[in-house]
Image (cartoon, rainbow, N blue to C red; front, side):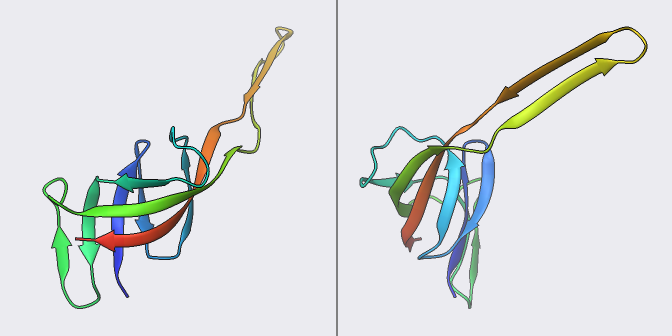
Length: 104
């Protein structure tokens, strides 16, 4: 089974064709296709191709399925016996991708 390791949004993901993947927000409308050019590793099941740091000419084509916000993350700070506490939270903007094609 062919798979690749790609980098987007400062993180690395292992992907195969047909996978669904949640990544940091990409500025691509829902229903459009995008190409991810930072392919770090590619394997077709028999041979492996390792980039230095990326593989030249390799790309992963993905379709944008959804733009959404992730679950809320809460940061709570406290200093004991001082009466100090503070709560902050945020929700990350995310993009759900469907991997259509991997070409190396």
